[in-house]
Every structure is written in structure tokens, then in C-alpha cells.
Amino acid sequence: MNKITGTTRICAILADPIHHVKTPQGINRLLQARGVDSVMVPIHVTAGKLASVVAGLRDMNNLDGFVVTVPHKTAMVALCDEVSPAAVRIGAVNVVRRSPDGRLIGEMLDGEGFIAGLRREGIDPEGRSAYLAGAGGAANAIAFALAKAGVARLTVANRTTAKAIDLVDRLAAAYPLLPLAVGTDDPSGHDIVVNGTSLGLRPGDALPCDAQRLEANQIVAEIIMQPADTPLLLAARRQGCRIHYGAPMLACQIELMAAFMGIAEAAGA
View (cartoon, one colour):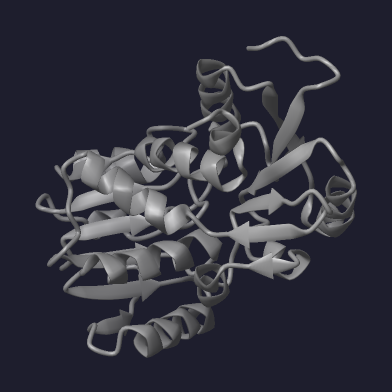
């Protein structure tokens, strides 16, 4: 890592828990490779303290921005001064740029990063059916990205059914020709199964869907980075499925996040 001095710019990542995050490693490697005098640091903040922490970050003159992850993506929308149309539609923010006057501008790159990660591994969702577990911030972004990528049909399942219904209704308004359904924990009958929840992040978490109903011809994809082999992916492998790790999603987001926060421009990219 570059030497930190009084001129070093700062960016951050906010999460709870924080131990599993991989973004600082990726961003800091990018900064070092480009010779940028900046560093990303992890900030552990609980949901009840998010607003006060963000208020403090707003007043840090050497802060370029911050990444937002579980469980703060949805709450972050209301704490920004401005959010992109995509973030408004999705209802979540995962990266924030701080302007010199302290204004906070939010964007949501989870969906774009997820689709880019799939394609980097040779998986094109266009024309395939997809099952998505989850209806939170990341799942919302992935749902809209799957629709934009041209999936043949999309099923959304969530423990709180009302949240799944709300997401499907918003998808239907944006993509009226896309066949949509609110699903159960049964992921069978779909080409791609996506865990868009945080289940699998903590030891003892329940599975995001009924893994016994997975089929060998399915692709099972994660968004969780750590552990790499989540309980869902381990179960999918036992069922003979092709598995897709969470890491490619992050790898594809690193450049996008850096550019949004102004790091890439600062490096002359």
C-alpha cells in the first residue's frame, strides 16, 4: 500500500458486519497500481448509527466517497442529497460520491456488476429463466439488471412476501412484457438461481431457498464474497449444478465504483 501522509485522500466502506468485506483490498490494489494518493478504509457501523456516521463523513474534506453494503443500502437512499434514476427505481444505493461542498450523490452498481460478472464467466442471462432469492437492496438491483439483460422470465422469492410483491410490481411497471412471478422457496424449473440475500454470510444462516429442489442443469450464483463457498454453493455442487461465485461481481464493480467516486479520473484514467 502507498505511504499514507497528510495529503492522502480517503474513501470508505460502511457495513455491519465488516469482517467479510473484500472491496478495500480491490480498491487499494487499484489505487496502488495507478499511483493514486488515496486509501479505502472499512467502517463498522450499525443501522441505528448510520445517519450520524454519514453526517460525519459529509464533513470530511479529504473524503472522496464511500461504498455501502449490508445492511445499509436501502437506508442510504434517504441520506443522500441526490441519487441516480436507477437507484431511485431500485430503492437502494451502494456507492456514494462526496462533492467538494459536502453533497452526497448516490448510485447503485450491484446489478451492473453482477451481470458483468456473469458474462465474464461465460454466462449470458439473455433468453434464460431466472429465480432470485431476496428483495432487499442488492436483490432489487439484480432483479432490474436481469430484466434489462433480457431474461426470458423472472421469479422473485422472499421470506417477507410483501417485499417480493412490491419488487415484482415495480419490475412490471418498467418491463411490462417480461413474465414475472412471486415465488416460493422452490427454485426448480429455472435456468439460473441467484442468492440475492445475505443468507450464508454468518455461520448458522438458513439457506436462501430449498437446495434439495436444485437441478443439475441449473446455474447457481452467489453475491456473497466471504465465505467463497457458501452453504448454498456447497449444496448446489452436491446437486451437480454449475456454481458461480460472488467474487466476479465485486471484481467488475471495482472499476465502476472507483470511477464514480472520482478515483479513476484522479489517476488520469
